[in-house]
Length: 462
Image (tube, rainbow, N blue to C red; front, side, top):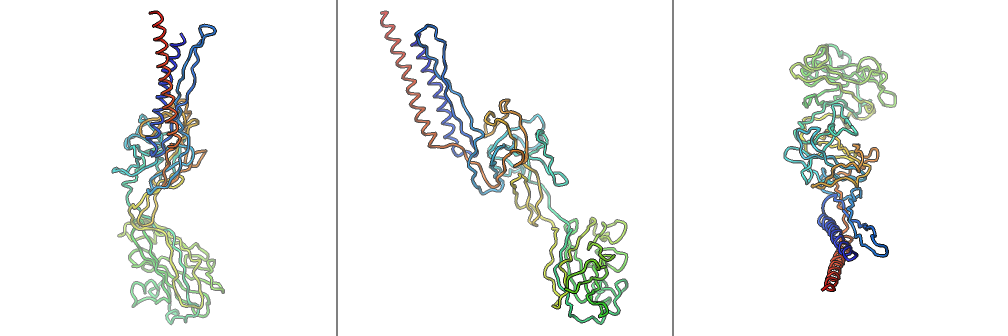
């Protein structure tokens, strides 16, 4: 009868509004939860078959929960370099454990990016979920696989070892005095005999004293510092704009060579009439115009020049940039020597860039890539299943997952040192709370009224 249907409709109203109250309660409780996505219960009417013409039978209401997973929260700056926020589509791939991951281990997806380094060196968020990424390969690239979650691994930033970079480039900015007098020893100079400038560097009682010396530090393959000297001796008046030059190791015993002790290169450095260097006619590195490069074989290797056997270090090639070596009528001086390479360094910080590349920063200014964070995208993110820890699991309605690098193929960009705020609007939730309370009270009133009417019906029989 209609009174019974009215009572059942009231009951359905109590159930639906209870669900709405639960969703609102969850939203309010998580107003400060990082990257929390609000939920909302939407109501839909239920229509029942009308058994008797002219009489109405109430169907009631049903509640359907809707999750606004794809809604973007406000990106806020944080004080940690490992805090990450996603601006746009995508989720961080996370797991419940760090070491020993297999294909059978479940993967979860989250936008909660408050990551920090745990005692074992893994990046974990506040829910103890381990951040996944593509490990860096030997050539510095990443094997980005859009569908294989097993290609990713928990990112560990500990036990990386020390960073060493051997010197490969040295740039010299210096001036040789064009107005200087020709040395009295220049007439007897011969770079292939005991009259060389490299001999003078080892023993000032022998060899030929140079007019000017530039000393450069070179980092070897083990992080050790090796010194290399470049000496210049002005040629006589018959060869203007010409300087004798030698490059040698200091001390000479650091290198094994076929000629003079420690001598790595010798020849002439030529200058143009405007004071700039003429590399096309310079013979310091062999034939005229040869590339200004020093190549030393490894210790113990065949051939010369090579690093001394006692050093036990790897082969090394150093490119010299002499384009800023000049010859002007001013005092000979070194303005600057710029070189790459770095000695032994230890990790002092971890940073993540907008492409999701996690790097270790060393106290010797070196930066070493560790891994790249991948972002998982879904065609219908709102259909993901919510699990504890502010994370989600895939579902069939959510669609096929694809893993992408940040900013590629529709994936959002990563904002380092930032966090995504909750999408809860407190004022809207409080308004909904009042409306839900009123609706719940009205539904209970339906039941009370229907009960009174049934009681009246029973009393008629009496």
